[in-house]
Image (cartoon, rainbow, N blue to C red; front, side, top):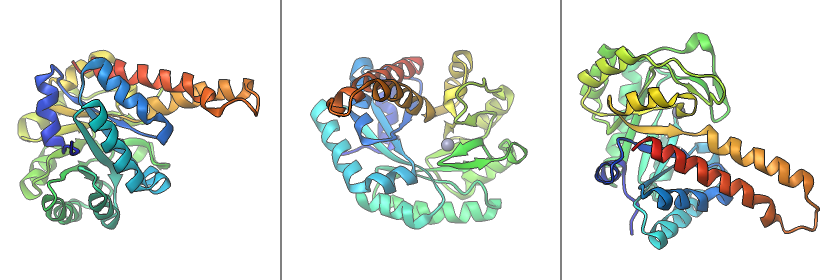
Amino acid sequence: MKLLNFKQLLPIAQQRGFHAVGSFNLHCLEMLPAYFEAALDTNSPLMIQISTGTAEYLGRELLVSSIQSLAEKHDVPTCLHLDHCSNIDDIKKAIDSGFSSVMYDGSHLPLAENIANTNIVLDYARQFNVTVEAELGAIGGAEDGKAVAESDIAFTSVAEATQFVREADVDMLAVSIGTVHGSYTAKTNIQHQLLAEIHQAVDKSLVLHGGTGVSDEDMHYVIRHGMDKVNVGTEMNVQWVKHCQDTFSSGKVDDSVRKFFIPARKAVRAVIAEKMRLFQ
Ligand SMILES: [Zn+2]
């Protein structure tokens, strides 16, 4: 089974009763089986996203081949997406390695430059049937270690969003409507009216970044108002580290290291399944 792009994955999710596709960041390879277990637990298709840092750390070939083989073994429709990348060469490398979806993040650039670079990525990606996500507006918090100052957070404007999709025919558009990256404890303040206006003006799949800190009520609202893709990044990392801290500190050096990971893997499986059910 080939990896699917986002536009192929979304209708499968909808047929199975999901309002949105959750896109889950993978932080290390040991975590990977839990993602497929959660998809099987909930009969959900699976979207796994990789930061540029993790892609460099693990290697794109290892990621593509392991994810492809698990998708085939478990018969889970799967999309492999490159998360936030502002380097066009790195995006081309991911596409060449077999990623089925990519994000070009030019949100820090002036609008015209963001549009021009997004079009370069689109021209390349279209040759390989790879879907493209772009970002407009500045989402707060940290992404792949780089922090966005609170003063630099900028909500996406309806006018700019309209112009953006007219000039760059992307598949998905990430918008800034009040979520914060990596927000694990604080509750976020979703701009309902702004989302409704963008959704009405822009005929594209919208993407919610920083899904971890969003309340269940807000999540119900956003997936019914245009958010077709919801990113969940931090929560799996938190569960993994929390459980490994316990097992590693109480274990002995000659215990099988595998045993140290089992509670973390169970917790990651549970948290992904719980999020997937929230999108139903
Ligand atoms: Zn993001």
